[in-house]
Structures are given as structure tokens and as C-alpha cells.
Length: 292
Ligand code: GUN
Figure 1 (cartoon, rainbow, N blue to C red):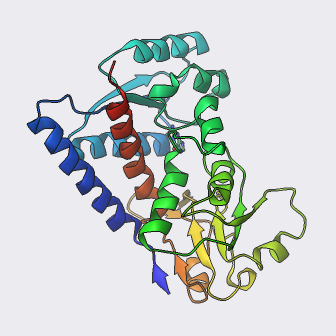
Figure 2 (figure 1 turned 45 degrees about the horizontal axis):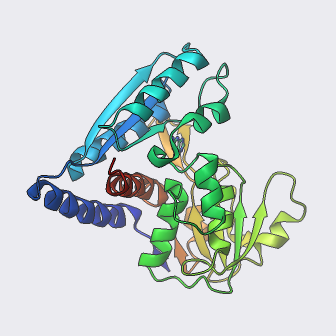
Figure 3 (figure 1 turned 45 degrees about the vertical axis):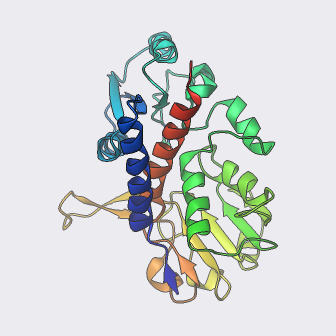
């Protein structure tokens, strides 16, 4: 059994990006600039956004953080997006999700200039991804592909079962694993809350990618011997003994599942850190394409 070390891989990628940024600086070129909009002060969202800003500093990118009140109107948020679309200094930006209920998330994502949409959530980029055209691939699925590639895990002809159909993880992952090339060429089953016989389907999986946000959902008796297990869950479970008052739990019963799997991602330290590095990679790409 091999643990897929997302933290180390993520650091390797950051070093590769930092080396490219140094060269850009040597040539007197502008370095990539990532901006993030966060609405409200949800603890988990703040942590994620702060780690994205920190990562920018680490690789030598510029970054800007725009904090809007949880009571902001949709119109005000759309105006901020328009401002960032038009700001030529910014190469890419993200709107951290989830957004408060008064805001139509899809309307907001549709307002982002696709050329600056480093999260890959705009319909243009999502469509391009499905059509095998060059695009910004959403950071978490992109990070999973990168882990599969760097650990040289075979995917061709394998049965990949994706659990959860969110627009951020499950849906794009199901498209990407079925595309041609490596990692891809998989036979994909996308499962969700209404899937019948889900345990039977999971038992046939060579690769399981789970993103449901339910701690310990995937149990050892559900998987087949030597399955590859990718755990995208990050749930804060209250724990008085923990320093922060909570512990982070994945969707997989790691202790037992790891005994039967061939490769497995830990939580924390698996997919999570990869997301941040792949966002940086998309921002570098946005900078390289941004020659207006
Ligand atoms: N919320 C959870 N994951 C993500 C992500 O990858 N991007 C953004 N913008 N929000 C998120």
C-alpha cells in the first residue's frame, strides 16, 4: 500500500512554479497575480482562502484578497467581479464558494471572464473541458489527475467510480477520467444520493474517488482488493481535545480501508494541498495567456 503524499507533491509543484516565476523576474516580466473574493467569514472558507494567499507568496506571485460582507447584494458582488475582469493587472481570480443564500451562485460564476476563471467553473471552461479543448481544469480534479500521473497509477481501461456529483469535484472528475489520454481512458460510473446498489457498484471499482462530505462513509468491506482510493472529503468534526476544537475527517475510514487499498490519499495531507498548487498552476497559465 502506498500513501499518496499530497503535501510533498504539492510542495514539489510549488517549487517548480517558483523556479518559473524567478525566471520571469529575471527577464523583467510581470509575475502572475491571483485575486480572491470571499463573501462572509465562514471559518473553513477563510482558512482555504488564506492558504491560497500564502501559497501565492511562497511562489512569488502577487495576490489580492477582497473581503465582502455576508450581507452583500448580488449586484455589488457582480460589480466587484466586473472590476476584476477589467483590471489588467490581475491575471486570474476566484470567488470562494459557498456563497450566501441571497446570491445566485451560477449567475456569479457566469460573470467571471473565462480567461481569468482559474477555478474553471465558468460554463465556457467547463464545456471546453468536456470537449477536450484546452481550458482551466477545476483545481481539485486537476490535483487528483496530477497525483495519479506523478505516482504513475494506471487508469486506462480501469473502472473508476466517482461518488458525489458536485460541480466542483464529482462532475468534472467523471468527465476527466473518461477523456482520452493519461490519466484518463477509464470507464466511469458517477454515483450520487439516488444511486441504487451503490455498495455493489463500489465493489467493482478499480479506482474510487469520493467527495460526499460524510466522515467514514467508505468502509473496508465496500472496496475490492488493491483498489485505488482518492478521498476528497474535508469535514470539521468537533473534538474538545483538539487544539482548534475540531479535527478534520475525510470520507474514508482510512485506518481500515488503507489495509486493503493499493494506493490511498490521507486526510489531511492528500488531495487538499494539491488543490492549492493546481490553482497556482492555472494562474501561471492565465499569466502566460494574458498578453493583452
Ligand atoms: N469551495 C470549495 N472548493 C472550492 C474551490 O476549489 N474553489 C472555490 N472558489 N471555492 C471552493
